[in-house]
Amino acid sequence: MSAPASALAAPGSARPDGFALGLALAALAALSLVVARDVGTRQLLLLWIGFGLGASLFHASFGFTGGWRTLLARGSSRGVRAQILLLALSSVLFFPVVAGALPGVRAAAALAPAGLSVLVGAFLFGTGMQLGGGCGSGTLFTAGSGHVRMLVTLAFFVAGSLIGTAHLHWWAELPSVGRVSLLAPGWAPALVAQLAVLGALYLAATRWERRRHGRVRPLLERDGRPFLTRLVRGPWPLWWGAVALALLGLATLVVAGFPWSITFAFALWGAKLAQAAGVDVTQWPYWNGAYQQLALSRSVLYETTSVMDFGLLLGAMAAAGAAGRFAPAEPLPARSLLAAVLGGLLMGYGARLAYGCNIGGMLAGIVTGSLHGWLWLAAGFAGSALGVRLRPWFGLDGGGRR
Image 1 (cartoon, rainbow, N blue to C red):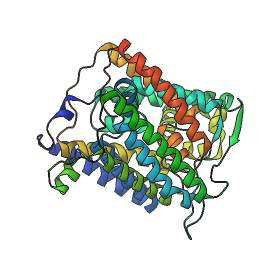
Image 2: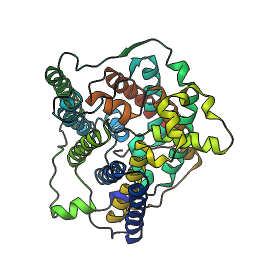
Image 3: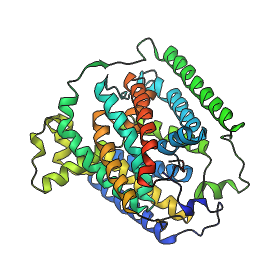
């Protein structure tokens, strides 16, 4: 997403927004009490982890959309290199866990069929995130920080997710090689191979930027402000974001028993709204699955991705308040809103076809050794290339890191 004007102010120059910060913390406290009383400690921990993810994403302005766009449009690789760092750190942390190499720790890999459904869905998602202005996590943390346009994207993201559940059974029947785990030869050799591939991608991105600009902007940058001031008020260097997301992702894996994901919650919210409007989604094959039926039958606070998404929204709101960057004034021309609508629909629909967004499909897949995660990366990047070319038609610029 393009960086808002308020995000371009000198670090620490804006006064904290006490109302936004206080409201976010009060909402977190109230929601924590409800979750602890009605659901349990596990969901409470996941709510807080989501809060940490939201704060980290906002302070580091960490997202895949802008990183891919700046590489494609301007040859700047800094955002992409930070993403590769996140993938490498997470792979090191996740591989032994999902392989069962740690005594007493058990967690499932994000294995999904690698086939045409993933390729089509990820391509649609990649195009949509460039039009909508944020990926799965980027949409949430930007909406949480008060950007009205991203609330539009989020609303249609939910709508697109619901529509995708109506059609997924057809897409799932298309050719596929099935669920393929790259950890089959052993997690240690698989990790070495994955780190070698990621290292090659890092070098390629670095060389691309050097050819375009004659120099490479480093990930490690000095700021001069006290550590605690920068930690609480931001902005963070991108590598801080990569480290924080890797560690919080590991916490999610251990507590939840599966990797961090985003978009099942959107489909669930859409289904519950549809039911409230009189639409019987239980007639759709997708909602006949055991987990889906259970999720539909009870409060969204029992559903992990929903609780974490709520925490992420509140974490971003709190971070934006601490930084004095909540709800910045922003123009909302008609063409930009149209792009938000189309982008949200494409992302929602694409995420269902691809078994998750850039977080639950790509990131979670790659760092737990699923082949479909790499297919997602290739198709999503190709879709982003199309989305970048479409952005000028909607009067959208090419800046920002999200």
